[in-house]
Image 1 (tube, rainbow, N blue to C red):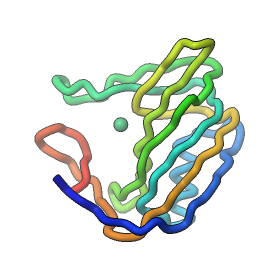
Image 2: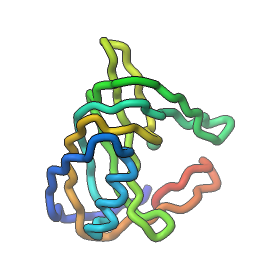
Image 3: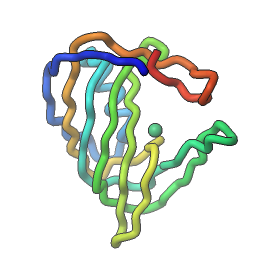
Length: 139
Ligand code: ZN
């Protein structure tokens, strides 16, 4: 196990811009504000999402693109450093007419999105390649 202790820092409500990619906007904001560790949650609606899961045998992400409008029932994740930059790791549960699409979020065009960002002060976790899993994990 690896433990990182924090104090809660700034807490921010962030409304993302229509038509732009959710993760790109979030990454830009985190970098601009110098937020290197955070807890993220959010709700809203997106279009044309790319989600997936990590195939543990193949050691690669399997991605699926879902076209059209989707409700964000739940979005949660964290921020830590990867390659010297704040890296948001986000999972989402998306819905269209009670059909659920869920997984690791790779991309989604924002229709309307409200995020809660709780920045964390303390030991900033850094992601590096973990040989055992093939994932970039906190070291
Ligand atoms: Zn993930």
